[in-house]
Length: 274
Image (cartoon, rainbow, N blue to C red; front, side, top):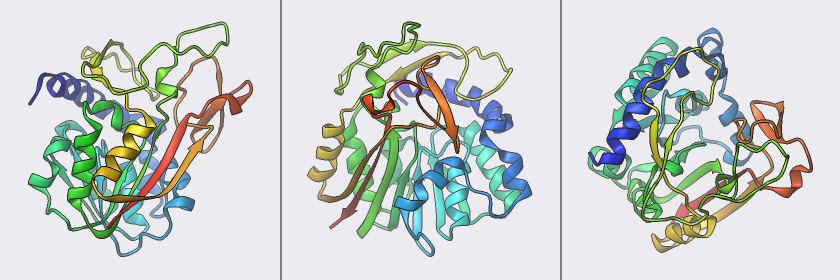
């Protein structure tokens, strides 16, 4: 593994059990109700359409709640992640819920080495995935390599413009301070805590992250022969991305409290392999 992968995996490995125990991931609801879906997949569902009978792969699946939600909609799902601790939680939840989902440990760029190439009807990527990858072009190559002809990509993620925002201000201003475009070197962060409710104190707090502009993402997919079929920008995102400036609006979504039309917070992109 490359250095950034070792550092980032240590952070995710430590946080996975706390995420599974947090009320924000609603594991108890998955166990209590066989029809329960994650907030993320419920948000995606109107654009996602019918997935019943599809063979799908969820890249960077973390603890599997979105993967299992897609399985509950009728897809036969494979989740892929590089964190063994996260996959332990995902496999346990799949076992306890009886979901049609299996989980494979792999770094994302090696996905076509551990999964059957050109065999998936759906490649799904959820919120908070692309920032962990140094090369968006390599990611697009993986997507194209996994999809069968006619298969489709569905991704919702944080908007690249949101990722440029300084997030510790107390004056209400939206200030661009971080890269919008992909850079060779990562942004290195040393921050405790996590994005869900938990009392756990973490020790592995250094992470390496990258930005990718929306045009870079689209162009990378086009260069791999995919046809973009949809691109929607949203004024909400499923975490409190700018503390003190956002309000919760239901369904696990947050938007700017003041003039939310100023900033796109997330996007949904769909594409089909020719």
